Length: 430
Image (cartoon, rainbow, N blue to C red; front, side, top):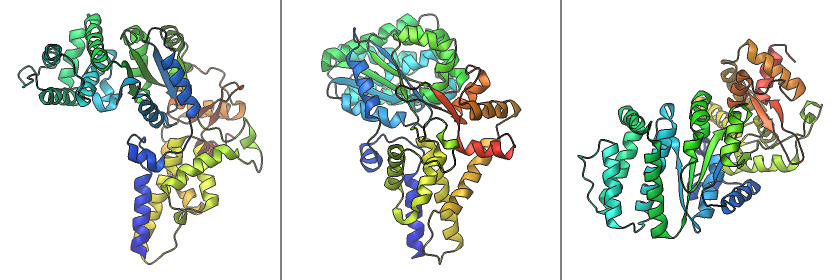
């Protein structure tokens, strides 16, 4: 019986991986119906792009569910558009992402998707594309004859080099740094060939750009947003939510994208300030959504109902934190079953949750300094920051210690992550 219990916790632990739902199988198993209004907003911006080349910025906290929602949105668009949906982290080493290799990655993934879907690009055109890619990535010596299968292998090779070979990335940067127009022209040629063969307009969706360090994001967008907006087709770029609080970057992004910015909000569990009241009860609809996410991943036999509700509250309404806390609870139970193999009725209860929260709290507190605590104290009391563009505040926002909330007919407001609130109490600041 204990063996069955161990296997059940192991399965729950696997179900609680901090990964987006990208595969159809995972979506069918775990996705909860929410975010349809965001999908509708994206659909409207894509559909209404006046010249078919609109650039959309999709933002939100890390772990708010953007990747899962974009995957679902991409699936809904495939009948009408030639959709290329890829993660920048699967193509390029994240510490080395720049505007040039983002554009090069678009070109590579356009051709990869065309090969995958057997788009009938004229043979002479394909050969010219293969030759160009091979030359630019030092792969000319590799076999890249006209056959489709060999062409597909070439792009797998190029993807591998972009991901693992810093020398190749540097050479691409040097090649196009002063002639970005040549790279954009080639991208547009590829897109035009795909459109001519498929009769579908192009939609490129680039995920995980929001997971870059803020310094890297600043470098990419501050000086190079115009280059990223040059391809002659629709592109959705993801950016960290902290970027849109930067006094220099936001106006640039708004201008170049015609203010086509969509934000994935944190699920609001309490109206502003209500969580400070004794006996405050979270909003029913929001709680139900998050509890559904838990029950799809953890058997009800393993989780006390009241503890599930507390996990929801401690998450602050952020999906990533919900999964992270539940995952830590499963790890603790997994170890307890191994230590006491004869028990048969172990469940995730409030005591287990307290241990999990304590572990996560210790992790969160390691990187907080005096200035950070001062900012957090101010946010806790005022639900705002006097200078929301202060770099230290933006770092706390990017790192999830501060969460941003909004709703229809409401101004944006901020609150401290519920687990970080415990750190403020320990410091005697609240």
